[in-house]
Image (cartoon, rainbow, N blue to C red; front, side, top):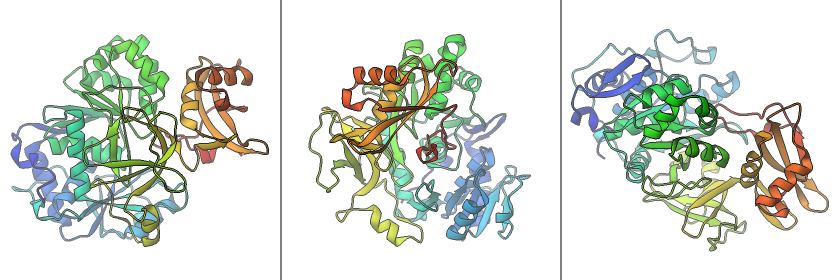
Length: 482
């Protein structure tokens, strides 16, 4: 297999590769310092990386991959029990961290190597000798239904996903990406760091997301922005009073949102203020990226576009039969297959087998509809967002979008709960824009019914001060009050 990072040797040596705050490495410098890390971890099967949003994390992961080892990114905000499980399960031979990082007690028994960005070698290791199926990363899932599972992501999946996105997004070495995403998951690390480096472009990491940083970087040469819905919501809120931010987004080549659905209301506010539309893509830890709106396609709010090159995608009924209708209404579970998929859950052959159908399709657990032109619209998770009410299968996502279009709603989540008559009734959890004067339940029900259909209106409305969210801004519906 060819190198994951041909630009480390092919790119002009003075070309910028990584920038974190005021610290920057050119391609020549990155090759030297990542090569030094690679020499220190060569022969180690799995290497844990204390994945702070820092230059050292990016260098460490690249070094691990150059050495042909597998990186295990550790979320610095993991609790003691979760971290202990991940370390026990993955059994890393060494832990990489930035000098001065204080590591928790769970890591006391592991050899530590500090990533020194002043330490360099003349020539980096050649990772081209690795096989397609060799592990590149072991990324742990969020563990919403039990202890986190380690998805083993092969080098083949990293390369094919990033090359498919290059095709879809017209992503080249001339692009400069800005983002403020964490580096312990697929979005921030694979797409946000390894993506630019595979293309030969540059990444400017904000350290911590803020709209001033986005405006500064996009107005000084950056061409792409990656973010999650929470970030784009903050951008939409800030745009009316920030002409520099308006200018920055209007001049960007590509604005991409992922990790959760971007509410249609925020799509429209950003488009109205800047003339630019955010595009969405759809992926998972186990599959990397599956679909995207293409750079040359229609950035249709509420959709995640079409399957990427090489990715097979189908919707299936609960009995496993394929959904043939592309009517924008018929709901089915998304199943995918292709070279973008993981190989296994580490040490979990039972879970690995259960994740795939007999004919090799991965069961995502996400439910969606397809429009007549093939665009995919995700309506939620099968376990928490598919509501069966009055004989209908209803996706929570479209109701949430409709609620967010009401001026009295700041945040919204929709769930189902048992109902003797309907099977399940639709429950709306609402954070009002004005807590002193929340919109009434009947008003919100009528609002939804007028936009979607009467059977999709919420039967119960419950008000909260805030919705529970994880580190990526995803709403944790299992944490809603019972």
